[in-house]
Image (cartoon, rainbow, N blue to C red; front, side, top):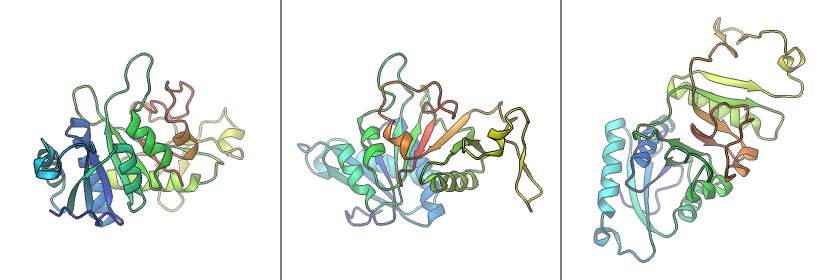
Length: 254
């Protein structure tokens, strides 16, 4: 374990606060770090008025529990921990400038009116310069990541980067990637009445665009336009990814 404040370059960064949802994000991020062969940098942000590390009530406990969770998930992960004073959103946005990905936990969306995501997630979605993973938890504290990985194929700038990351996550997690084709020149759009099954040439394996209805969405991978709308007070019922943003979300801004 290391506590250096200068070890975030290329790392997968995860913000922790001692919650179950934060530990779910740590477990998810550990696999990401090992796959990329970079350290997992665990960041505990405390208020500016709190005492430094060992004098801060619970400061070491939060980091130690998070490190234990990471190593139990994957003992090959290289863990660095650091406590930083400031506002969580501002600190994690700053961390994103040197990171490969920033991961945070989030509880289930509140029922009724209210924001779908909290202030930290909103700040990251709006300003982070690397991908941001928002790992949802169920009411019982378990991670909401089981199910297909969903991504929209569109004509928006940067969509190739979004789809590329979705496919990478599918390979890493051993999960089906559901591609929802909204491109203006899509053959599926031209012939909406024809059932379509896409086959990747040379693999001999079909990818079923339709027929995966029994599995919910575990992770939605979205681009800049959705990131800019992520602070909306209500979930859009017409978004092509069913269950977004109630499921876990991976935001790709570039």
